[in-house]
Structures are given as structure tokens and as C-alpha cells.
Image (tube, rainbow, N blue to C red; front, side):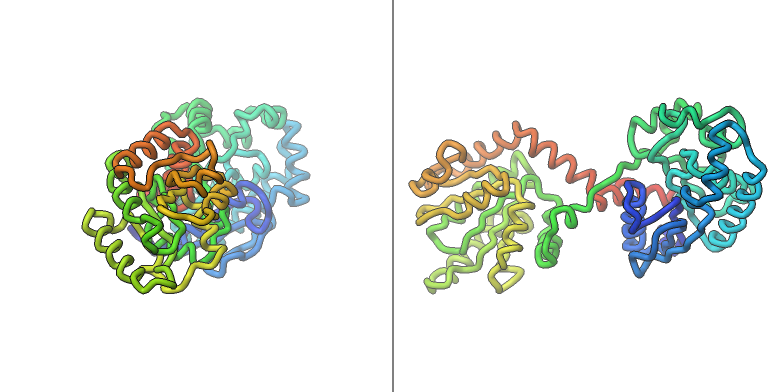
Length: 409
């Protein structure tokens, strides 16, 4: 892969302007520069929000530019005013200057909407005159297939540019619906149109702490399905070995299942250090290295409350196999996190969980506990939906599965 490519992203406006396409543009820029590309944003409104991504303002490409609005008012009536070609020439010169060292131009929505048809026409003329930069047309919306725009569209130039398959470009849409619409509109094969969905920045959405992000990265928790949380200190009464044996059985049905034990060795019993060693030895002996994670292996410090809360947001279920508890705070925390609870059938936990938790004996065979948990997750639509989305619709997944291969075509 040639990460020496210079890539430009084009839209009417860019972050910090608030909008769906603007947000996507910002994420694309971040992902591309993270992967080593040289990236710039070309827009009329916006500013440099990432020190690694250049921003160049081109006022004439704005959808809200007074001259653009004046021209659009006439175009909406089916009239191409004299100012149109003059504006088109000015934009073409601006683009020629801005794109002189660009290898790939990704144009978002400007060739599918009629917000600034002079920009569309200028870009078309540039593309007709040169095969550089490589042009990727990224369509979020299609004016010709959207009823609210139809009164503004007319047969002929320049409106037909929005429904013409420009030769030598890469066509990208954000959904299968748009793929079918574009295929029918331009009379081109479905398979010639790339579908690249939008995504979510899970870390920002969940407001995860920096320490959580680093631990998650080290443990590779992004691939966990399901992720089980055991938020306890390492003491024998917590019966952690049952959770380990259970996980080994659960991974027969869910090969990506993982367990995180958040606490360090208990501070009041010197034998807890030996217990921790025994747990790590057992973990490795039954083939769970990389699947059962003890936070104490990554940090000697007790996790602050915000980081523990983060793990509740990341996890799919709480498991608490304790032989003895005085109360059972993790069940309350799990309830606030809308998380299913699988716990030992002991009095304090039964008092809290009542009929809403799933119970097993602290002496239960691990395969039986695993079977109960597997049965739950196989039938739980929230988990199944969440797992599918997490695997395909985070921005990192979208980039790896779709955007990166697109640049290698």
C-alpha cells in the first residue's frame, strides 16, 4: 500500500460545522492520517480541527455563498444564468490550484446534490481534462431520487451531471438503498458501486477514560463476544477459578468470549498473592491466555471508579461466582449498566437479584454454568445485534473493511 499518497476530501463545509456529512468527513480524515496518508480538507466553511490535517478554504464552493445562492435560484427555475459559467470557471481555477499535488480526491455529496452545480460542473470539467487526481465520488444523498429536490431539477446540463456515470471515477454510496438507487439512476451495474457504511467512534460515544482505552487495546477487547466482567479482588472466596473453567467451556460455543477480572490481590491476607499466581497458572494451563485478563497483570494500581464503570459499559454480562459475599455491589452496578447478571446462588446475591438474575451453585460444574450463559446469549437479540454492529460499524472497522481496500483499487 502506498501511504505516501496525498488525499484531499471535498465538501461544501467541514468540522467544526455541525452536520452528518461534515462529521463523516472528519472521521475519514482522522482514519486516513492515522494510517499514514497525507490528508487535507477542501471546504468553504470549517477550520483545522486536527493539527495533522490541513484545511484549505475555498469560498466559491460553499452551498451558502451569496453568488452560489443567486445562481441556484435561477437554476431551480430551469434557467442557466450567465453567471453560472463565470462561477464555474472561478471554481475550476480554485480547484486546479488546490489539487495540484493531490493523488486522490474524495468528493462528498457535491456530485449528487444540486447545492452548488457550478462546483459539480467545474469538477466534471477538471476530470474530463485529466486523469489526475483519481476521483472518488462519495454519495450520501441523491437529488434525482429524492422527491423534495425534484422540482429543482431539469433535463439537460448541468442537472444531468448528477445522474450521469462519469467515466473513470469510483462510485461510493453509504447504504444498499443508495446503491440500488444509483444503479437504476445511472444505468450501471450494482457491483460497480461500492457500499461503505458510516460508523460510530465507540470510544468517544462511551466517553471512555484514557486508561480504559489503553487496557482495552492491550487486552484486544474489541474482538470479545461476549465480554464477561468479574469486578472483584483476587481472594479465594470470590471463586474465580470457576469463572475460568466456565470460560474455557463457553468458548466452545463462543470462541471469542473473554473475561476481565478487574481487582488486584486482596490486601489483608498474605495467601492472596499465592492465589493470584495459582489463577494465572490455571489460566494458562487451560488455554485461556489472551482470553481471560487480569487487570493486575497490566497495572499494579487499583482501578479508579471511572475506569471500572467503563468496563461495565464495555462488557456484555456480569459474572460473580462468589462463595461468600456480605452484600454484592457489582449487582447494583450491573443494573445501572443494563447488564445481565450471572451469579452464585448465595443469600446476599439472591436478595439483590431476586428473580431478575441468573443463578448457579458456587460448586456447579463449569460446563453447566457455561451452558446457561451460552443459552442466554444465543437467544438474546440485543447481544446479537450489538455484536454484529460492533464488528462492522465502528469507524475502525469501517476503515479496515471498506475504506482502506478502496484506496488500493
